[in-house]
Structure formats: structure tokens, C-alpha cells
Length: 140
Image 1 (tube, helix red, strand yellow):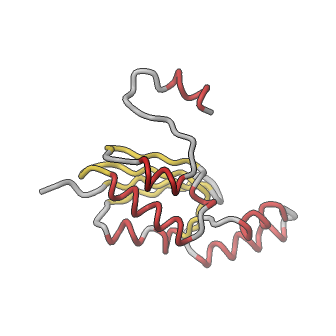
Image 2: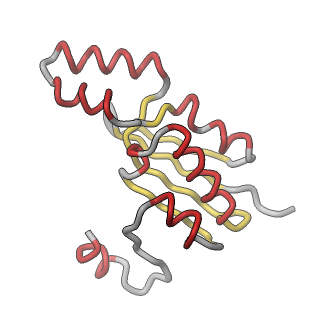
């Protein structure tokens, strides 16, 4: 991924990082304008995800952006409906992934950002793939 990303990002002032996310956000991540994560945070438990989001929130400059693309559900009801759908349609591997991983529950997981005053835009790309862009409030 780094090899593919490097030529596409040439000229940009950014770091492409592969690391343990919890260690990175607490030990390495410092002041930044934008944080992007794709398909990594669904491996974290609910508490770990909240911890990582809090650390990222602290690292973002006022007006900064947090962009997350990952496996998500709108809420618990949609999680259960999709789980049933995948089992009934014979896609038991997807159902097993839903049970074993920690896909985002947008109704719950966005609360920390809402409480911190972030403005949030959410887009759904497929049954399980979503993205949100959250902007930290600027200083007045």
C-alpha cells in the first residue's frame, strides 16, 4: 500500500503510517490538520475505538479534519438486519466477520465527536462500507 500510495501523494506534506493504532495515537501523533484512516479501526473494541478517537481529537488543530472510511452500521437494528441477510443469503463468512470484528455503530460511535462539537458528514458506499468526515470546531 505504501509503494502504491507514495507516487500518488508526491508533493503533499503528509506522513503515511503503518503502526499499532493505539500506540501511534498516544505515543507518536501530535498536532496535525488532517487524519485519515481506512479500514483499520473496526479491529478495535468499542472502548479502544473511543480511546483512539479521543487521542485523534486532541491531536487535531482547530478546524482540522478527521476522515474515516471503514466497516459500519447505521445502528444496532441495521446491524441485526444485515447479519440476518448475510446468513440467509449464504454469505456466512461475512456474517462471521460481523460477529468477530467491531464494525462501527454510527448511532453510538459518533457521539464522542458530536459531544466535542465536530461537524460530521456521513456517506454510505455499500451495505457495510461507509465514510465520515468530521471537522473540529475552529477557534472563535
